[in-house]
Image (tube, rainbow, N blue to C red; front, side, top):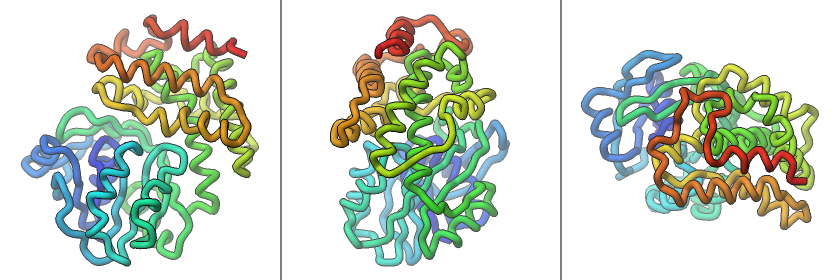
Length: 323
């Protein structure tokens, strides 16, 4: 299979490395990362320890027949990434949006119209971009792919490459499930400067409850219901996670986060549907403030202590009692 990974950050590089075992893969990323990969290969450490030899470029000049484009950019970068390749798309091209965020695939569909097929996918694999040419594989999980006549072939290919893929019977449900967990995990770990396992601290349960309850109410207005407790699930799923959330990674690097497509998107959709989400809205405001600081070079400290003292802890904890 011809696969172009558009957005070779942590997850994109990890998926590209794994998929290169059985496929013709091209990674598209930033200059320094691309140069390192072309010179020395892509090194994956952590749960894997290998150097993968695959092609890397800073832009796409052409798209071959029957190519799969794996879109792994940040959601806010989707428009620029897809607009840049729109003229190269073919009728048999498939774009698969492997991203965070609420309905991120709709951004792509609005840009390309009916030029080619667009699918949504969800993953909980964990990866950290350490430096150009090197990523850390931190958490094994799954890949859930939107149902389509081509989806079984893609899922089988991904699974043979170690990416534990399946075709979803309800991708919208899968998107919301990950979204709610992300709305708890990402902003709280980023504000408190903790590893993902820190979210399991019992003192954060009231805050997680407020976040997830707001999300559930909005999801229900969208026809999505859940038969499990999100706080319990988060405490179980992240108990042993040594991963650093993507939002915290972005703040460390002084980058814009995906907060507008997570908690911010829930709050915005909630307003349209008549559901107020003050806690998610407040978290979005706090993260936006941290983005504006643009000085988080010493962001991680105290060896990821469960609740490291920092100037934003009180703001986060106070949200537990904000209503």
